[in-house]
Length: 376
Image (tube, rainbow, N blue to C red; front, side, top):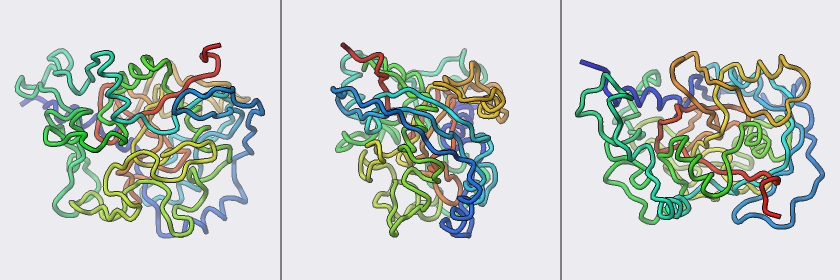
């Protein structure tokens, strides 16, 4: 029996969901380890540009001044994780400069994406029937439109086989994020999900914008502060309060998410405090597409080149040693499924990755608009 389309797409969804390297915080306290790390931090101070924001902001966007900063993640992040490897592809830390730009304050919402679809008639990848050319070994009955959906397990399971909680669901798409039985009723302000890379890029082009580079995304998420574990500081729960929509409880068990952060599953945008640049949800809720091809050695190559990388656009070709034939782009920010048991990529310097034609119910995007592209 040939490889089913469900397996093919779910394999790709692993990159979308959680990346090759997974991690969960260990038992030592965050504050203790972060304090120890401060003494030998490899991060140099961020040097933001002093150019003021242009007078007129595009609707829904905030100004990110750009400047020079230390990009990546370090051993302080790695030491918090029970499963090793969370910073392997985010090393070494290197200096980067980015120009100033406008950025969506929130992830693109369902109502925003609906306007785009109504204006253009656009059909997303998940709504298109897969072809025999794409999946030559798939039985014809498996060539149906759909996408990947997180599915809970009835009891605790070992976290070594993602097929236990990811499924290919016929009829899952942006209008039906969990499958045909789901809809967007009352979810106009939720992030749009089940979006493949080309879908996000098409929306951005229609809006007169583009997707952020990975460097732009990290500079914006850090909010002008160097070397913090999270977008808000070094403690996961300052004052005992969660700062992002992530997964608390037993993963991936049915009803395992306790909702201690205020939400079980995906949340509407802008439910937590913004960072210093006015950006919401740069950690948790949904992963966000970046324009860069994913390579595990990207940062090593930039470091080897020396100096300060100026407005890096990412490598010319993708390469993930875990799946060498898959074409992947960078994801950033983590999602509502990131958990301290399995995936802690809500840490601001860490990276995700996704096969470009794979969508899932925890991946969305936001756009940027460089100043040079503003109307005069």
